Length: 133
Image 1 (cartoon, helix red, strand yellow):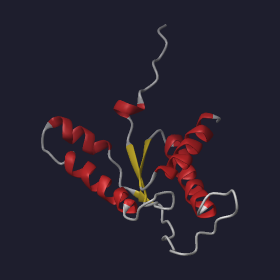
Image 2 (spheres, helix red, strand yellow; image 1 turned 60 degrees about the vertical axis):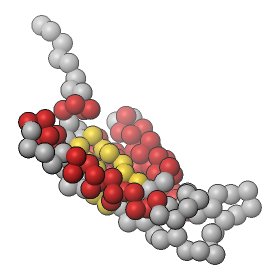
Image 3 (cartoon, one colour; image 1 turned 120 degrees about the vertical axis):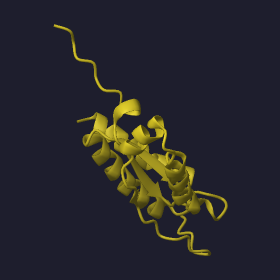
Image 4 (spheres, helix red, strand yellow; image 1 turned 180 degrees about the vertical axis):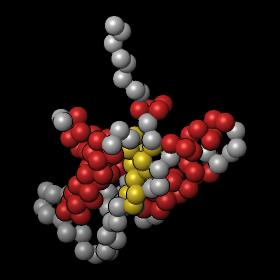
C-alpha cells in the first residue's frame, strides 16, 4: 500500500491572515499601517473572476487583528542595555505566537502581516510551538 503524502499547506491550506500593526521596533512612525494595507492589497489581488483567483479567494479566511498599544513618545520604558519597548513587543509577540500556533493546529497557513520586523518573534515562536506537538 502506498504511503499517503502529506498535504502541502502552501498550496492547499486555508490562509489565515493575522494583522499585527506593530511599530515599536521601527525607527519611523507609520509602519503600523502596513498590516491593514497588506491585507487590503492581498484581497484586491485575489479579487479577479478568473479560476485561479477564485480558488485562492476560497482559501482566504477573514483577518484576525492583534491590537498593539500605540507608541508613546518620550516614554520608551527602556533599561540600560535593554531594548526599547521590550515589554510591549514581548506582549504582542506572545499574542501572535498563540494565534499562529492555533492556526497551524487548525491546519491553516498563518500569514502574519505587520508592522515592523519585531513581529517575527511571535510568528517563529508560534510555529515552533506547533511543531513540538
